Image 1 (cartoon, rainbow over the protein chains, first blue to last red):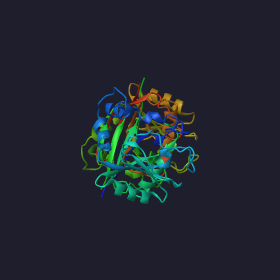
Image 2 (cartoon, chains in turn cyan, blue):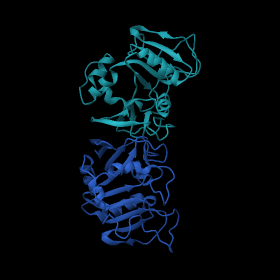
Image 3 (cartoon, rainbow over the protein chains, first blue to last red):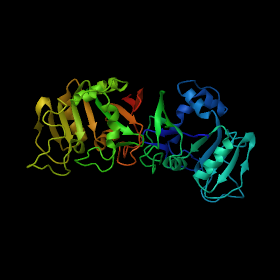
Image 4 (cartoon, rainbow over the protein chains, first blue to last red):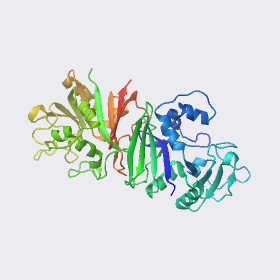
Length: 214
Length: 214
């Protein structure tokens, strides 16, 4: 069965987004500091159509996290747009433009029903209103022999972690403080459900902690 | 001038002690899990008069943290005993018995005045009631050419971190969740005051992140 793989960048004080997230500032105040290490990478810049960058210890970690993914799950907040029911007249189609970087089916957890959205390059968004386990089932079916990526945000991740549904977790610990915002391990309890640290990769501006379910 | 050096073990979810700390359970529920990696080390066991153990990647990190320390600062809660004024009839003299493992002057932050306490082996406890900066000044003078160790607990550490008084920090990140308890980075703000990650040491059950002020 395809694995549910989760990766996220977290500050030393446990935040995965800064305070005051909004449509204009989806990462919250200071949240961009969690991703500076990634923006330094040639491979990451290329995905965004940017030049320059470097190859360092983080490169193979990110390459691994992107490989063999056949479907993605994300929370409504990560898909974006104003909270509440969908605006039919002025529909929000995600942050990623006409050709999003997923190139596979994406399942969005939401309380508000909406028809599936098919964009260019093989990316579709299916809106799932009957819970995280239903979304995982759909994503696994869509992924086939490949794995499912849990893209975030914090609320979605917390629900999968609390139920022990995550098979692999790559935690990118960034040596900075955000002081407030959204914590990853909030209401997750004290049980990692068998996730064990199997690899630590040290870079200058991030420490990658890989957990695998045993 | 002697540096203020701080080391502490922290769970993935940011806790340095579990919930319900008490005289009988000073680390709180589950808090002992933060220190399992240390109890595996031969050198740590020897300090406690125990046999066995192993030498691993953590050994030089702990050796470094113990070297060149001439004085220690700790909070009242770490020194222990029931909160509030000192009990003159039944005095609490710390957790460590007649010959504590410090062998140098220790300064205890407290709101309640008490005469200094001198125990065996060169360890003395001086109770400082006029704040963290006064305690640091006294500890620096006592340490001479050596450094000052900030032993914890969380509340004491938070105050020194928030004022930017910590020169070196060794964060032992333990791949476990406590779910609740005492957070290290609570009310510390979003400023590390120049503390930068300079070294990452990976062991199986702990990741050591060393920060130095630049």
